[in-house]
Amino acid sequence: MTTRPLQFLRRGQPVALGNVPPDRTLLEVLREDLGNTGTKEGCGEGDCGACTVVLGEERDGQLHYSAVNSCIRLAHSVDGMALWTVEDLAEDPLIQPVGDAPAAARQAITLHPAQEAMVQCHGSQCGFCTPGFVMSLFGMYQNHVCHGQPITRELAQEELSGNLCRCTGYRPILDAAQQMASLPGMAVNEAEVLQKLKLLRHDALAHATDSAYIVPSTLPELLAARAAHPGAQVVAGCTDVGLWVTKQHKQYTQVLDVTRAAELRQVAQHPDAIHIGAAVTLTDAFAALTAQWPQLHRFATRFAGLPVRNSGTLGGNVANGSPIGDSMPLLIALRAQVVLASQARGERQLPLEDLYTGYRQNVMAPDELLVRIVVPRPSAQEQLRAYKISKRFDDDISAVCLVLNLDIADGTVQRASIGAGGVAATPARARQTEAALTGQPWTEATALRAAAVLQAEFSPISDMRASGAYRRQVLGNLLQRYWLESQGQPSVSLDTLTLEAAV
Image 1: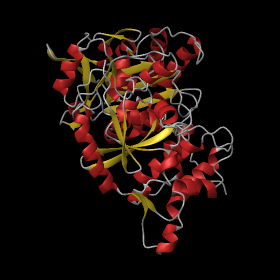
Image 2: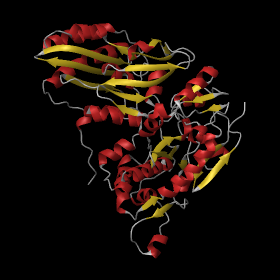
Image 3: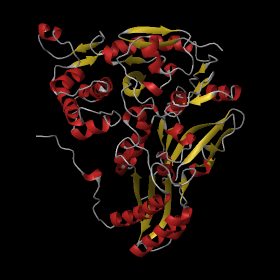
Image 4: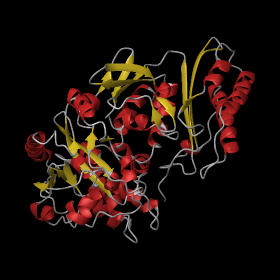
């Protein structure tokens, strides 16, 4: 099969690469093909952040920045985008000083504020993780500092949660995040970048139907490609397929990328529901959900780290069907529906929990794709809580995920929706527990009875994250915690701690 040319913008100039295999990662291209070894290879699975780079993409006429893991990102997925690595911050002519500093002072600037802040705050020791931290800081700088938004300690901790430091410790790095805004300003010349990206996008359209890496730009084209190439590996953000490449050493001669289909990239607000396209990133999808349910913010930020959420998509997480995927228990509790589509039969809609037939198995036909998730808006009586139990607080996989959504009116449970993860072969709906709650008075006795039902409803396995007995115990404890919180009992957990700078 032919491989379409790969083009992206770097240091203000287009980079064109030929004969890049469809399953080659961006990190491999940077380090091995281009010889840019500043970007490091650490875990190879998107956990440590040493490989972080920043992508720039045009969205609605604006330049959108995303810090992503290059180790599990397919190289062809950045076609038509701008790319920055740690080597580029002091070399890119389109990153320019701002403000009214004297010309001599502006010429003396040799490091980007993200780099200079790390130097001043002593944020580097062995230096292996430093390029990834610097690139996450660069993304933070462009998305916040350049818009006049302060970087709080909490924001810095959230946006650096996908970067692992083994020696320096996080305090000086968090100091650096806050220090950036006080240094002489630098900013990307976005108008020029957008103009250059427009030329690249025009060239890319000519290769959109390439047979090795297929990247349709509309839903009809995507469904036609799915029907014509049922054996192609479907990818979205590639945060799971990327692991199959780096850890299982799988090879793919043909890839179907769904992330450029315009219809799948949209979040549509309707009077009765939010429609989230399957290719909407987890970052944007959670933003849409937390705008409606603000209490989900901390739960959303605990889904992996920011670079993973910037690449991964909600539709990809749902279609993957991992029993420990955190978005599915939430969506089940929110009574979400999924919309599947094929070129031959059109669309069909079903409850999300009915999508799965077994471990990572689903009802989708070979020519079907998941195209959007429909999330009903909340009722006035709804009380939603989402709980994630894991060994690490940030950037870890759940041992148990439980999301409870009860409609309570006049002291009675009118309706119950409960999603659970990590306790069965698929993300599951706790139907027996819902039945035990519905129509009952919302009392401690009801909660205790329901907790016992919930513990008996699932038979979780024991693995490296937790024993089956522990998982059952946690399920019951979380339902009791939900009862206490519904009665105004303050929650005491890491969520309630305030991260203060060292004095």
